[in-house]
Image (cartoon, rainbow, N blue to C red; front, side):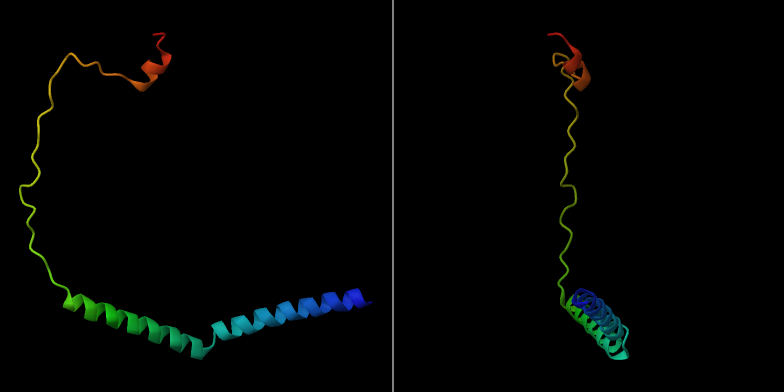
Length: 87
């Protein structure tokens, strides 16, 4: 008897907890708070982005392309050939 009452109490407690959490999550007060915080964050992002200093692009012609060295003395090894070879 005591065991069944204990399980009933646990089930009621879990259901009550879930109900109260869902009720708070979908309440108008919580929605207003979340929308206000998102709005404040967006306003902060806009204000910080207006204060940013833009730097000039000084990376023109920085990369120098080098032609491949045509040295035929080097062997081109393949991974599978190295594993399968008996040497």
